[in-house]
Length: 309
Ligand SMILES: Cc1cc2nc3c(=O)[nH]c(=O)nc-3n(C[C@H](O)[C@H](O)[C@H](O)COP(=O)(O)OP(=O)(O)OC[C@H]3O[C@@H](n4cnc5c(N)ncnc54)[C@H](O)[C@@H]3O)c2cc1C
Image (cartoon, rainbow, N blue to C red; front, side, top):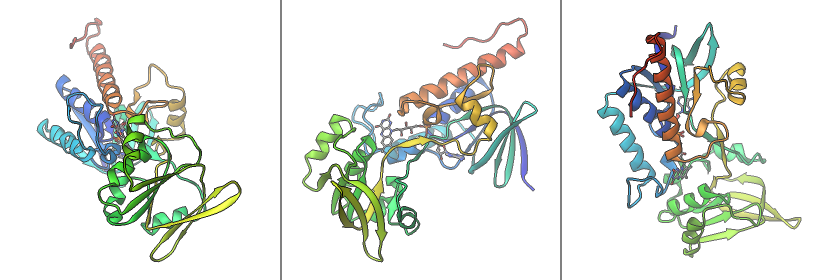
């Protein structure tokens, strides 16, 4: 039997988007139910966050997550630490299910971030299952100390992973599928300053072979095969919104949002979003303000509602 509860507003996620919304709801005097796998999220991977105003020296991802935790704790925002497995909409209520609980909500904010893309090549799943391939740097960092590493990818995340693993690893090979590097120039410049990091371009990954002590990424260039043997592989080839737990009806709403809906997508989970902390926070804040306005309009039938700066 699942534990059942009801709430006016439910939030799924404990990253910058939902944390911001939760704090703002509290300021409006609304009680919320926040359900999250863990506090923090993607940002845990960030080597150094330098574009968040208020941190003149930058801040490490894990340190920032600790600040989010403290802020939720200081504001006494209760949260359920659990994984949402399904959400459906029935009789004007959002029904949110985890393994052990069922929460019914009038309004729902989905701030579940993103999931990493896979290479989709032979041997990838086996390497992941055997803990030799990682998609998130915070999961794999401790296993890459004094090891030879491949990072597959050419964007900000791949270059940020390289800088993050620089001190602990033996050496790093960045493998790019094409000649084009998509990462920010500042990250490219930092990476190029290090002899420990080698960049191989135009190498298409086609297979991964996991042995007991080594792992091989087989790449292809000009119709020739180039196997590269290392200890650990990180895959950082992009991320996509994490919404697979939604019912088909709600996924359709994700594609075609309606203004009257009480379902809000915030942060990296939002369709077509730019993935940045400040945008996630802005989304969370805007959703909280819009929902407060709608709730006050429901309360004050004369159409008046409280105004906050
Ligand atoms: C390597 C790297 C470096 C980055 N550097 C920067 C940077 O310098 N500056 C910047 O602005 N941005 C940076 N970003 C992007 C930034 O991390 C994201 O834009 C930001 O974290 C998005 O916040 P969010 O709240 O939308 O999602 P997330 O932070 O991903 O949070 C999602 C939350 O949802 C929870 N969740 C997921 N699925 C479920 C489920 N089924 N049930 C319950 N809970 C669930 C997770 O536990 C998590 O708490 C970086 C990202 C990466 C990967």
